[in-house]
Amino acid sequence: MNILFTICGRAGSKGFKNKNLKTLYHKPLVGYALSLIKIFSKRNPEININVALNTDSTELQNLVSELMPSVINIERKAELANGTVGKIMVIRDTFIQMESITGCIYDKVIDLDITSPLRTIKDLESLYNKGIESDLDVIFSVVASRRNPYFNMVQVKNDEVSLVNQSTFTSRQQAPLIYDMNASMYLFNPTFLMHTDYLFDGHCGIIEMKDYLILDIDSEEDFLWLEHLVPFIMDNDKGIEEVYQGI
Image (cartoon, helix red, strand yellow):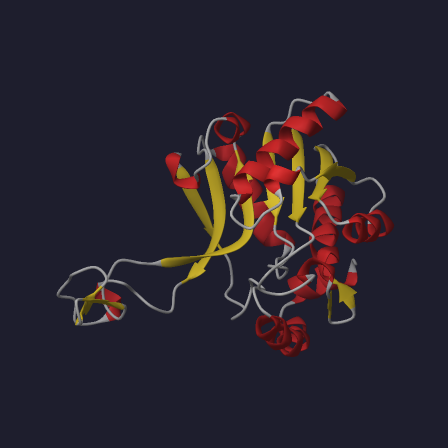
């Protein structure tokens, strides 16, 4: 089994400047992804693993090289370095270049997001196992949603307020289960990855993760809240502590 791990991070960010270079609770933010890969590799020595960093940031390249020298740097192409480009396009370009560089035919591609750092080895192994046990095109991580469009999410049209999805449910428990994509982990079938720019064009699956309140860092406020939460989370979740200690 040949697995490609991708880590993608642009140099610029309109929402939170240089967020991919931040230090979260005394450790580099990108280190959380690299530590998880190291743990997964040690627990699964039979799997051939390559790791690629796709970025246009020299600072991020240098940081990752210090933390894990075996990571292969893929220079972010200019046409893929703006905020409107879908991440799946960046992952595909990384995959194509890595097959050319390594000569390896990858069975699966797993992307770990830098700014959704709170993951455990159990989460990653759930993603991987579902990937090899199914014919799904893509599998991604989710958390249970706190709001439900069939019950307590509304929209305004022409000054009229209505449910996002019309229903007559009188309690949230009656409504369909709804999940939030937490942007933490994605597993792709390479054939699907090569032929689409849109995640939901394929047969999708999910793995549910624990909700740590804030996972995806899009603003300085998100980051500051996470800084406060990480010590408490580690005290109560040995899986998160294991990843932290591995950085």
